[in-house]
Length: 365
Image (cartoon, rainbow, N blue to C red):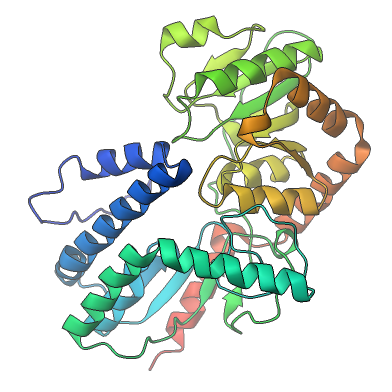
């Protein structure tokens, strides 16, 4: 937050010190059945704390409305409990269940035929099974607060461009696709020295400790005559940075919106914000999805022919070299990235989303 009029109100529960750090550490290893189970349990605990203490925080600041992220299900219940209107912000893929569309956490190919719908229904049933700790937390609180039927939000406001989502048949009429919510203009940087093509490599802020994956990326970039530009989000030590092969440029964080404009391609884990930044810069992608909604995002990138997808288990220098050579040299990938970029420019961004939210709230009596 940079606007001086925007402030932060903490939860005053007296027991949350270090909770967010612990939660983020859990998310960083949320792969495999054990990691997934721990992540869901931690998320349920975070939801319970918000249900316990967020209403008082909102009363203290005199909140007249709530903007609740779709990934945190406590928001609508808290809004109903307080009797205030709410809007759903969709920062990643739309999470609305629809049988034509695969669940967002899987990398299934889109198909709307009978077999595809059958597969998707099974995927959603499995999702509901694993998400029971969160659903039970919400159900108990609805009973305690006497909330029977869920109110609908005034609007759904997404930064996902329409062109990047599958064909949906049952979106709510108040759902609005958009484009990345970014401050502009992005800071300028001087191009790195040298005449080699640059390839941006990132695993986001949660997965940046995976040195083995970064080493593969750095070596593969060098083998195709390019230079890796690695952003690890603070996950690597200086010694680990220095040990990476291929003479990469390495920092914890880069001004990636600007840097990507200098790159020939990007190797990404499929985190939604970095994907949007790469597409806005018209950069083709090799996606290596690790967890959360990343497989679903990667599947969409492959569907629209803007990326090659490699599972982390199959990632090697050889497989990455092959994928990079394809996305760099086949103009189809960059042409599609350019098409997506143009569509995103018309999406309204943060200011467009604010207009939608303001218009929805203005209709209230």
